[in-house]
Length: 73
Image 1 (cartoon, rainbow, N blue to C red):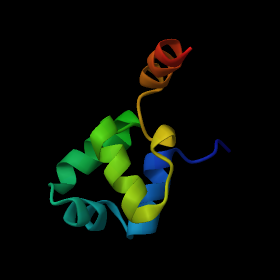
Image 2 (tube, rainbow, N blue to C red):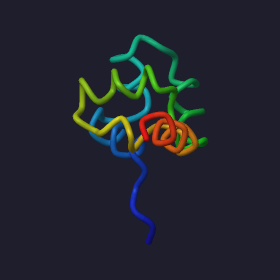
Image 3 (spheres, rainbow, N blue to C red):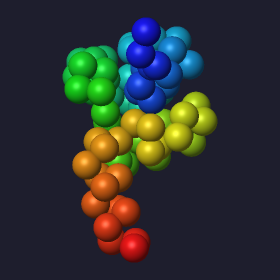
Image 4 (cartoon, rainbow, N blue to C red):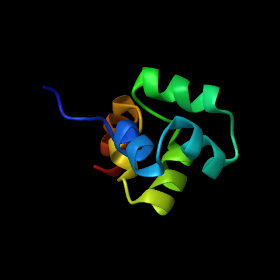
């Protein structure tokens, strides 16, 4: 069994896709799209981290982390 992604953890902590969407003031379809993709926009990842404590780095597109590592090295 693969470990859950950051967005999966956030959805679980929020009480479901609809609950997370309500908290963020967006439609459940948007959250469902993130769930299917496996990552969220960086700005929303920071917002979710503030509400639920799930690290933003666990929810963003991995290619963004790679770019950030290159910039900061």
